[in-house]
Image (tube, rainbow, N blue to C red):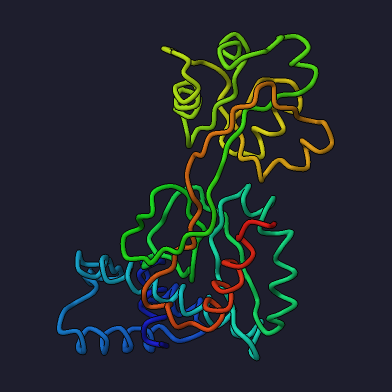
Length: 287
């Protein structure tokens, strides 16, 4: 590890002397470590020209791989130090699903699994499990994620909603009436309104309106009276119960499913197994 750290520092700083200063070593010690690494690899990593060094093409590629590996080692060490008696689950979540559905339920999981620490990172799109040190992720859409196993959690049903004030300004009695009202569109689902109108039997050639990038922002914008939004019913139960949002027409539409995804090499990881068992139960419909 010491040799690899010396190489990464020299590659990043472009100088054996600067790397030595960062690592509190002598310049000759760094030079010897890198020379030994080159002998072990059977190829030069740096081109040496008088008092300067620069990475070879192969050295540049190797540096990127080593830098990513060292980050993963550092993250694993930090996680272990934070919770040496249990385990750490690094989970990527969809922002609004995480704040509206998962976060209120996580205390239950942690109460039953006191040795596990859960770290949450928001993601809007699938990422490469090999490139990032995530144990699992919440996924929406088609049950496909290269190199991952997916477990179905729940279906999503979207409903049209708006503020009471906007409904008073735009009398809406049928799905077709929504064509004359301002509509809010989610960037990640640009054709959601078109699909909803088609399911309601309404021809909608062009549907315009304000774009937002997250469900939480769409819900807030709809509450403020900026337009009508198509939102997952289970994410806005609070707003509907308080009357902040109302459904101008009865038009539920099943729009997709949520999944828990994880890389094959984490299949037997105990914190993931515990979380997988718990979220399956938590996602079951309450009767």
